[in-house]
Length: 448
Image (cartoon, rainbow, N blue to C red; front, side, top):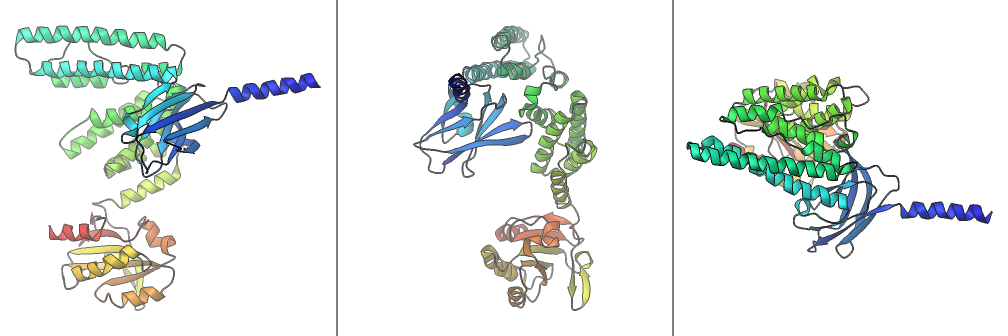
């Protein structure tokens, strides 16, 4: 019995000892920085692991026993921007960073793998930038002697880069960092190109040479998404909007062909591109990415909430017709699309319980009152009609619509209203032409 108990205690002891931790020091003190959050990256997803308060500018979190090797992310409370990614493979990690520059100041105090990978990134990036710079300089040279000097320096730098890359690949063989070091390798031609177009063609042709889209370790990171963003947005550029979008479409198709049948990787890449096009407000490409690729993924991979949210944003994009609004007025059914007689319409969602609204709505009324070129359609999101009737009685020149159930109102859901007041400026055909954030922005739009 005693023997069994000792064996059990031994296993418990081994289990406790095998648990790893992440510790950090943040300097100088930043009163806004109060909490650190640990996530594991799973492609485009962040899986919550733990969190910790900062105590005397320091934090410590245990990484649960049995946690997978991969890329983990330290994020911070919402008042402080930035994050730090690191490798975890059953090894304690300790680091310090500058609170004023969290994302770019991380220095690893322990974890040989992270130190090695950090050193690789610094050395490799410096040599890659030097090689790119020599190529750019070469385009402008018109002297044969300078051509020879530049080419000679390029070849020496390329040899150095190749050796450094090989050394780090050999040094990290069998380690987690090796997957990322190999994937970060960049192709450089054995000679310099005479024309920028030849150079760009070569970069695009060899861009994915060292990326294995079936590498499970790379799948549990943001690398595929980051590479796709870079390929689409930085290697396909035109001043013409239509040509630019055609280049984007072609680039997305090329990436999907490179990925092949790996739908999980496609999913992560497409989500990254969807968010990028949404951020840049490129609604035609957002719709293209969803309709031609994302919607065709297997059902178990698709995020229907994401699709609905993005399609709603497409519908509410500048240049699109404002979604229909219907209401009853003096016993007659009215529609937004059927209003006429004005050059512009201001559609505003507001509420009598919103302090910002009570400040801005009177200003909006004063600004628009007597202006025969514009008309305000005001949708009040309310829990009851009492306050609405009192306020609407003062807004006599507007079309006032009561939206009961507040945030649950169908009009609010159709227009994705998450805050009040929210403004839309429409033209005479009810096409959305601007979405000012505040009354002052709306006023400036018309005054300018």
